[in-house]
Length: 270
Ligand SMILES: Nc1ncnc2c1ncn2[C@@H]1O[C@H](COP(=O)(O)OP(=O)(O)OP(=O)(O)O)[C@@H](O)[C@H]1O
Ligand SMILES: [Mg+2]
Image (cartoon, rainbow, N blue to C red):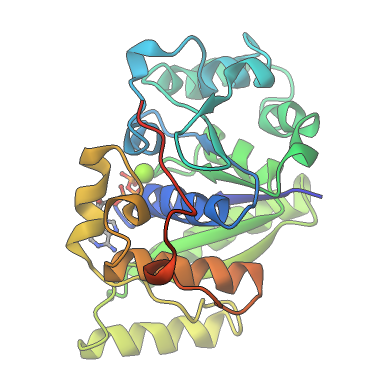
């Protein structure tokens, strides 16, 4: 049965979209069927796959509002086994339009019921806010990945997110669990990094991913080439770190590292 995972943190710029794109690409290359849902009006996940927003007929907005069937909204990303429900700026309007709609926090969940089992993983990229769009994602999900920076103020934001998770769990989705907390743009040489990791591990025992995503220039360059980092530079530290995260999530050992894989994975040019 497919697993739906929201990638959420109301703090901006912590690596949510980057994590969705690169984790999805990696799991897809390992033969898992993956769907990304871009639930952020900024549409960074959509752009990172090189998808031109002008070419789109439907987007996440239409799915949430009920203007399109989810099956008609899914497009190919060019990465093996990875599809996406893309986002455009329209989605910003959904936050307001949803307020007066019936079942306004269950809409994503209802739309995904029919396709959940067509995929091994569905990743939802949330916007940097705890509004109706993010709540829709949390209500629809089995798990949450929380990317965060190892900086002093990161903890404060986390308690707000945990409160929201509690509210969603109590009222709408009792099975919602934190899949893991992911440190991104990580620099293990800094004292503060170790301190923040230790603090977060104390509050969330067993929930911090062992894999830390380092700050890596290849990760930040890849979106402008419209590709996940593993297709842009498979030998980079960035590609390697998302590979390790992929294996941590799959719960299986890494037998054939990216660096040694040749010709088995490919990216279709759009
Ligand atoms: N490990 C990394 N190393 C270097 N740069 C990174 C890394 N992860 C993300 N970035 C860069 O940091 C910026 C923010 O990342 P990203 O867009 O994934 O964050 P976000 O949480 O989705 O942001 P928002 O809240 O605006 O949606 C981007 O320019 C991205 O390319
Ligand atoms: Mg983002």
